[in-house]
Length: 183
Image 1 (spheres, one colour):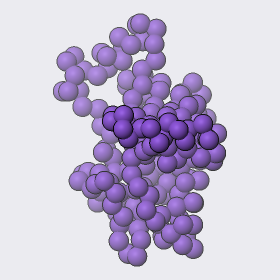
Image 2 (cartoon, one colour):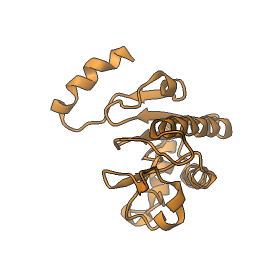
Image 3 (tube, helix red, strand yellow):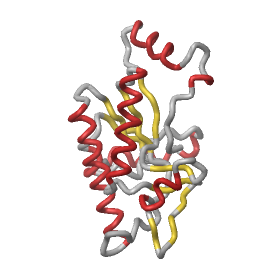
Image 4 (cartoon, helix red, strand yellow):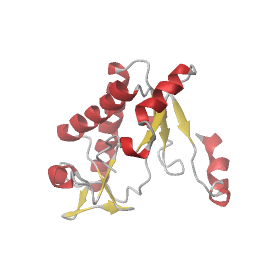
């Protein structure tokens, strides 16, 4: 999580072959990413030390992941490269962007408070989403956010569609399904 490199060995004949077949059948190929995070064991972590949410001097960790600060040019450049690579090499035209972490506090770096940092980073993330649409006008981006945590009006207007959840266990989904109409 964080490198988002294509691993051809996982697919017989390579992943491109699958996307080519999808297009042959008249469909659009999609892929899932969690662009806002980097796994704590990702080899890129040392390069991004100054790009993670920090609270009281410590990098915040949620579910084995660091949250990236989209106010940082290095983060934007990395993720633009990832997205562009998937579009150019595989023909991906649909992204499901997931947010499977608990934001906890936000970041205190370059902010008046952790809440202010969380707010600023959220705005920077949405600005990045808009920039993807500007560069790739036919792109479809789905927002899926850990049970709808990011199913707010600020987010909803930036995505083509919204997932309530992709929870695998029906007993975890009822409260999300009931609350979805409120959005």
